[in-house]
Image (cartoon, rainbow, N blue to C red; front, side, top):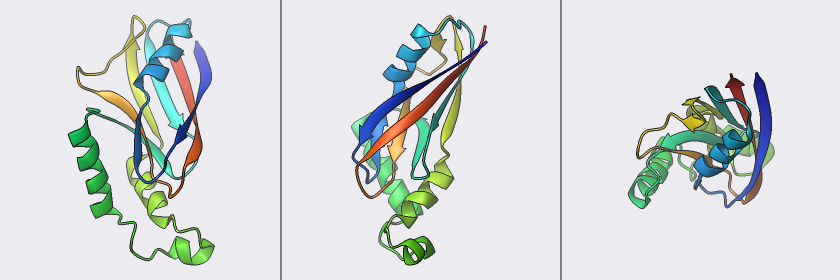
Length: 138
């Protein structure tokens, strides 16, 4: 069986990291599927999905790492072509990825004790984000 739903949320941009574990768990609770895999996908090309220990130190470290990997203050061909100043956000998203697959059993995501699912919004402005959450299993 497969079920598909969406989650809408507002983000601040500028490497805003949002814990989405609870909304994903709430969608799973509403599903008729007990065991299987969950796929979480963010639509758009300037935000990604991953897991972290959602605490202030890691959040700061992750933001610093993204700044070192794809700085927001250097020229990008995308910016020259489109003038929107968010070339770095597309690069960061390409490196992170826009989806995540998580196994679940007995309606419980198989996450570690300190592991949360997060959306990282890399864009240079606030956005309304849409997540597609799909559960596949029995």
